[in-house]
Length: 312
Ligand code: GFB
Image 1 (cartoon, rainbow, N blue to C red):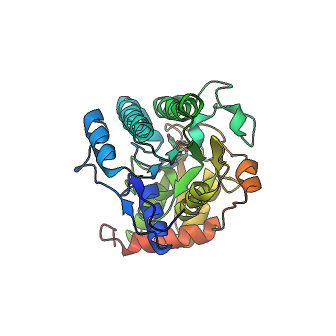
Image 2: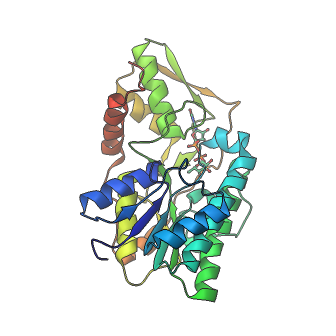
């Protein structure tokens, strides 16, 4: 890919989009385009159509989505379904109509069945029931990846669906109720330390296992996938190992330096027991994650502390 190739990042302010923007800028790509949601509401078909008709990017990374943790997924399930279906349908179809060379569509490991065999291979898709806490989000994402596959089949496009494991990193949402577990606990534990609280409440039993991928690793994988000649239609991106929520809480406690206790609120849902991705497909293509969880959390904590909204 030429350094002046026109690349449109949909969702450049989100966790994934902003990491990719940083990466592309660092690598010297000079023709990156983006719009904020106020400038371009991707849920509106005519607006997306006229934007892409005029802009005519060669590459599109579809990182715009309505996302959130286990609680937000349940509470706003209609919005998660509607917003994601609209955004992806508009962008994918317009990308095809305007001759986009390659599109990367961002999915999630929660699209796989709740009790899928571990580690989860790409071919386990649609082989069992989904986890109920994120069914709406998963259904939308499955529709998006199927749309990519069927456009490739019918129209010969090159639309790749990327399935990352649980993401974290700078620029994440640290809201204590709506965010994912890692940023939520990082904030709660930091706050407990600053306020000298005796304990921190962790949702669920602490036994579910999750695989955490630093968003800078994902950004590197995305650039790798844009550049390679032979592209898979569906590809998992992860680190190849997972830990329990209890282990994560202990690690965060250590990094933040919180001396109090951890208690578990079992009235909150656990979600899927485990979703470790099989990453052999991307490994065979020649890509592997580099950032260790400890290193990634330390860096994320530093960027959280440096942000203006932090509780000091
Ligand atoms: O990250 P998380 O919200 O989402 O929760 P999922 C992971 C696990 O951490 C669950 C527990 O077992 C939670 O009960 N947990 C403990 C907490 N304390 C907390 C807390 O303070 N906040 C949060 N959020 N969780 C999401 C999906 O599932 O994964 C999305 O809902 C998306 O659709 C994303 O796919 C990657 O890993 O369960």
